Image (cartoon, rainbow, N blue to C red):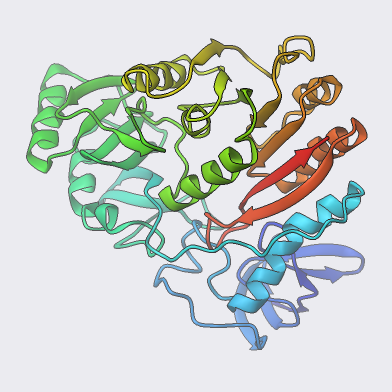
Length: 408
């Protein structure tokens, strides 16, 4: 074992120490702590805390330290907010952006409505939970403090359902979404189902009153149409669709974007998904919504049509924006725009926006590093940043959403 002094907490949530000019990463440690560690590589396991930090608090979850789902339950709120704000300000500063962000928006525990479990069959039975922080093994959980009660209260019946799924050498991925009509469950990486296995799963879905069960992208049964509310609209998302983790965060982000673009007659929603922003924007503006996932676009289009003309037009287009971004010429009729790309960012698309005549842009991102690159391009193209709003819908983790409002 080796004794180390932790210099700071890195951007992935690990404590970082330096030995002979080399960085050593130690999960679940804090700045200033002296710890003993085990391991010889750049990532070591903590064995004991010799001198704890004054920032250290008791975690809220009994699985903390072994579960890989949360990295920062041991850090007090003041230090946590300062560290998390640094995730936003540091990449922005490197990009030459010095505007101070708003205070980080926090949400209470037990508010996450969607999660992806891992599952595997072991001699001890079916294990359902999250991959351990430093291992590839699954830590079976009894409850998770960040999940809504509707998921925690049904962990046993979810496990019972998954126990009837034939497994391969790969772990199962079990996506669970709380909808207005019950849990929507989608399972991937299963073996092809026999007819007997299919019937067993259908029966269990009925008994447990899940809304829908999908296995390997095949919907086995839909007892009730799983739907969620976006703005004043009912949306039926496809299985395992991208949905914002917290309903409260989704509402806040859509309100921020819609309020900022309210005076625009025509707006573009790029990387629109199932319509998180488009359906709210359509209350005041005609919307051009672009997305690569055809199933998500179908859900958006269906939701819009079911409003019976209460919303302004939403025109959709299936398009890979990484390969073929919407050009500045195509945006010539748009006076407002929102984009919410994957973690890799939207550099090619952002260059087209910078060349366009669009007056107002709302940039939404779950990755401050790539967001900083996108913002640097927009600022060079003549945009001014009006507000930066960090939104912590991934509590206790190194992830957060950021909404940035820009105007020429």
